[in-house]
Length: 375
Image 1 (cartoon, rainbow, N blue to C red):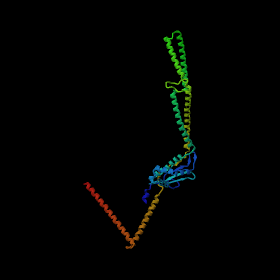
Image 2: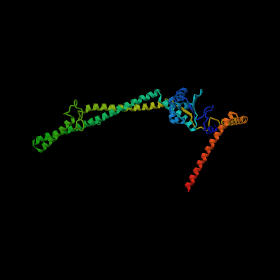
Image 3: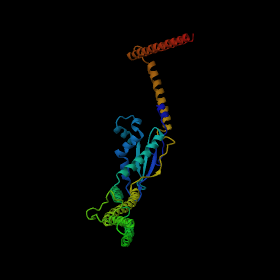
Image 4: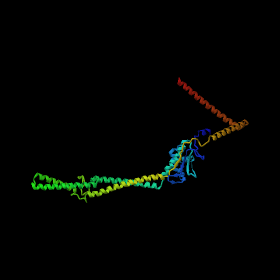
């Protein structure tokens, strides 16, 4: 009827060739660096996965008053028209909806879900390379952390901060200590030739020689077997000279492993970033040519058709009324059909009068109640 027609919201008419209105979006079927058939895009757009995501994204089950997703999917398909140009390969999505803003939102949702699905099902070589590098990076990272932890623990237990530098420093310190020991021995022999063994100066020189000998032996690791015990004792602050070669081997091995892990991790990180960029280039992505906008005018029904239908309905009703009036006047008063019609009309009029009386009575009581409340 006319009320329904007037209540219909504007549905846009966006396609140059006519057809359904609503949010229309042009999509180029050319991919970044790839040539893919437009039918592939159309098939993905019309897939159940994309349609279900569009329905859930915009809550179309409530819009269409559907209890089941399958029914909402059928409603969406009936309101959507997807076409592809045979020459240009451009895909057009046209959506018809009672609300113009929702028509544009549905068209945009189709493209968004299309790109997401294409990214998920991507099986290009760059994608496989990115997955491989990602797994290798995770492995290298775990191994690097384990090696770094082992290296730090070894250096902490053996006071091995920098074995090559420590070796040079200890050799220099050992030579200095050895020279002091030799000088102390010479001084002791000179004093022994002059004084007796009980002389205070001789005893002091002897004590100094003994202390230097103990330090030289400890420094050189005289009582330590490097082949059996290369670790640092708890009472020692630094490893002895004899322990340094074996500690140096382990130190350099751990140091080399940490450096190799760092270099490999850095190299794989660069390759991983390159693979991500390449993957982004190879992922099939729809390029939007004409973004969906809110329609400005309706596509159907046309107001002229509504006016013509209303005029035709009024003419038919008037013609029917006149024909019925003529037949009624020429009908015999004893005709059973006329008698039945008069009985029905009288019954309806009596029911109407009773209903009107009840309404008047109710209104009167309400007015009396109001007056009493005012008093």
